[in-house]
Length: 197
Image (cartoon, rainbow, N blue to C red; front, side):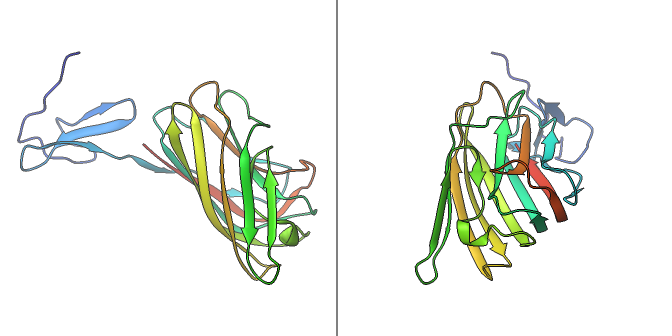
């Protein structure tokens, strides 16, 4: 394998003459002539979660290693748990190991295999507003793990969410916010993602 070396006077910039981009990543040298890989962070276009049964983000590049899904005041019309699904070419709808819980009094705990579940049973009510973020990280070739904190208005405190995906058939290229039931419609809020290499 050959190596392309950048000159020591090629300072890192975005963009800058002499910098190199490969597979979505930027490479350059700093003032001490050290080689560096620059992490690329992309904010997608926010989507109003005011209609439909799913909010999809597609076209995610193959170089992505971490994705943050952000919710602001997201509500649905029903009582099915919200969940996030990922996929390569199509969405994976089974094989997940995930759970959401909060601890107050006896607490609440909900697990799911159809996606990364975001809320326990006590919070899945129509009109409940959810705000927070869930981070997905590539753990090996095509398997992802998650962790997140979501504020739930009906519970009036935060929900912890975590899990692991099934092995995808290829690089992740899509992520979806929906519900376990799959028929409840979104009726309030905003959803967006940030992805990183």
